[in-house]
Length: 110
Image (cartoon, rainbow, N blue to C red):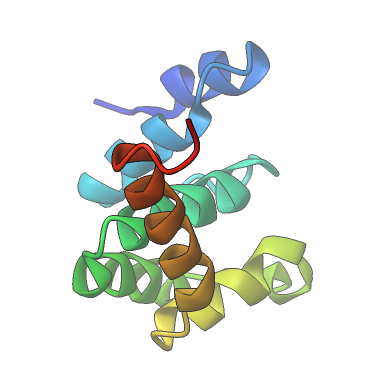
């Protein structure tokens, strides 16, 4: 079963295509012919890393990177995927988000 039609619908209607991209990664399905798929993968991988599951995020990024077609290295999101494949995540950004959420939970901004 291909998830490509579901990705098309989600992308066209701006209904979280990164969620479908994540499912595609889980089922090891690529969709390089859709220009929005690499970016959606990068967002999905970012969201995994943001939860602290860096190993899974890096594993997915490495899987995508290993399947880059010729010429894909010129796509803007490819640089991000390569960084994630190397384990280079925006840790400062994640930490800042966690600090803010903790302060909100503690009622520091009431």
